[in-house]
Every structure is written in C-alpha cells, then in structure tokens.
Length: 139
Image 1 (cartoon, rainbow, N blue to C red):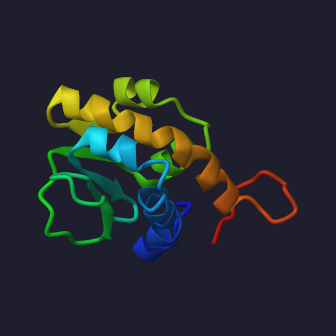
Image 2 (cartoon, helix red, strand yellow; image 1 turned 60 degrees about the vertical axis):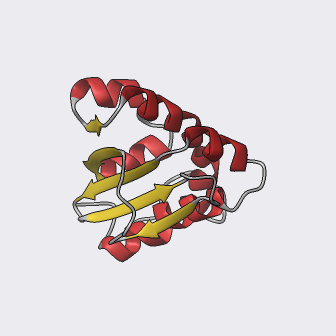
C-alpha cells in the first residue's frame, strides 16, 4: 500500500514543502546557483513536481502539468521520495540501486542536490504527528 492516497496527497505534502522552499529568502541563492529546471516524476501514484529556477527569475513550483521544460528529470516511486525525505534512504544508494533515476546533464544534477538538505527537516515536521511520535501520517 502506498503512503499516498493519490496525486493530490503527494502535492499536499511533498509539493507543499517544495513551494515553501522556493519562497524562503535564505534559499533563493541556492536556487539561483542551480539555474535549472527539475521535474520530479513520481509513480504510484503518478504525479509530477517541477521546480524552475532559470533565467534569473524567482524560482517557482508547478504541481502536475507544467509548461516549463525540464533539464533534469528525477524519477522514482512516491514512497521512495517519502522515505528519502524522512531521512530513511540515502540518495546515492537509491540512485545506485535504481530506485531513483536521474536524467540530464551531470553538472545540473549536482547543482540541485544542495536544495534537498533544507527540505528534509521541513518534510519530517509536516508529516510527523502533533505529539512528536515520529512516524509518518498515513491516509
């Protein structure tokens, strides 16, 4: 059974945290240095999150269909993304095992990796029960 009920559930959790990141003034320089467009193509349930930080424009996130053409596509099951964001899965290991597949120029893939660090604690806080029990909320 998937952690996520449907694409809207993915967007309400992973997408929401990504939207918070692109609006954080402290993280704008990280997005500016990345200067790319990344699509996170998730499966089970099928969903897509596109983060565009190109052309000196403020970064933005599209949930679902996007007019932005990605330079990098990172594909994985939504549960793999969830496990990674909880800190239960190392990205390098997931890539080596084929749980995550990254396509695009290596320099652009490497440029987006620093974006993930501030995402992890925010995601854990979003999905943790209010009493601090530590487990992910399941629907």
